[in-house]
View: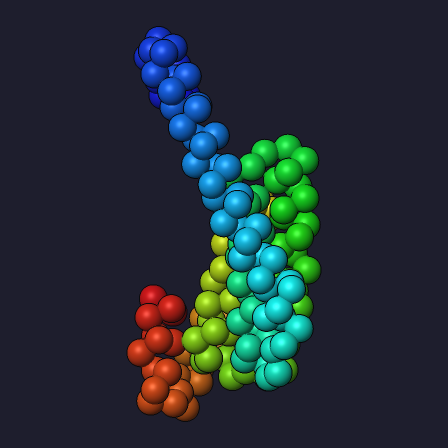
Length: 156
């Protein structure tokens, strides 16, 4: 929309704005449906650390997606809604998952993206990502064969 406005193409800018609103509406519906499943069924039924971290990370990720395409109060609300599940997942991951576990590494990556992109905290984001990376590197020799490929792929 901005690009078309800068070119003086007001008609195209209006089409772009309308299209963005349509796509954002569809994204919101999809995110709301997934968040409903997570809150209504999956999170409460998670029985071990791995599944608890996975579902809390997923909940936080979907709120992050909403925060990335909304603005103003809606963005602030989505960001706040992402913060707690990321923190909860990180706490459980620290206790229950090895530093090289692909879900723990994915959580560190996504949480740091959230801090950087949504919360505008680049120093905190980089510190978190760097710590996860360095901790995993130190334990790489002890990674189970079945998760080695996933772990190293996330680390890249």
